[in-house]
Figure 1 (cartoon, rainbow, N blue to C red):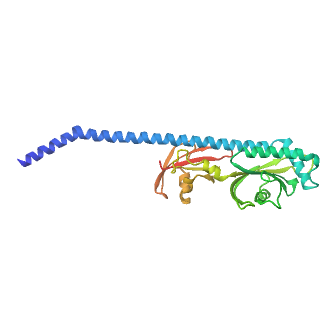
Figure 2 (figure 1 turned 180 degrees about the horizontal axis):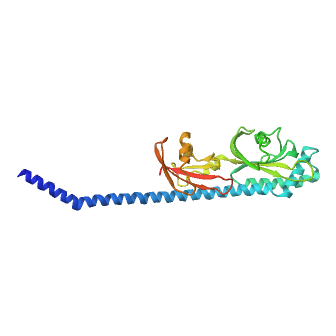
Figure 3 (figure 1 turned 135 degrees about the horizontal axis):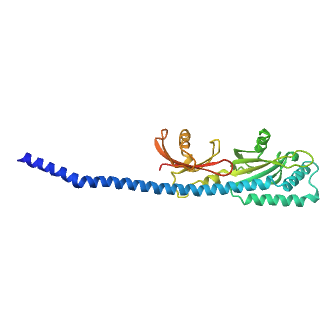
Length: 293
């Protein structure tokens, strides 16, 4: 009798499970999967929105820098007059009649630099000026007395046919303040009837300010952001990206494809990462954002 009751109970339980509990269980799985998918879509939407915000900021920054570059290197009247002033400064000195024009041009240059929050300083150099150059920090300056002469060495070593190049630099000024820069070099061809037509514009970009801009706008500390050049070298990275071990960077950056949402497992970190990248219009730079999403 007990066995009969037990078998009956089992049979009824199976029927109940099949008729009621199993559908509820399956429905729960389906709803759970749908919720996960909706949540992922929301996270992806926020991730893309944050990427779009940073892209706009970076494109505005590089456009402003490029405009500054063009205004200081492609204006024949400006470049030729500056070259002439620097020739005179290196030889007999500026004439009294030249000071007003020289100061007006310098004021124009300084005003342009001050308007860009990401440019720390700028130098304008002409070979005809010998050791003299214009500094946005010290006006007419001399290489023999100025704290930063590394840029001049880079200029002397650079390929003559290389019109623009860049390099990260670390400098300590006369007051002991450390500066971490990404320095952009742009050749100037001033023309004229005598002497060399070669010159150089040096723009020192403030690395710390640009990396602060890359911090996640939604305060999601796990979202890393990199700016890389066309060779894949990292130019800037936010605080989350700096915490990624160097040996894992290559694997994470390989997930990147411009404009495509990618996910993949990173063996050296033992976790999955999501990554999206976008091309920045100027300089061949590329923004990559990634996170554990």
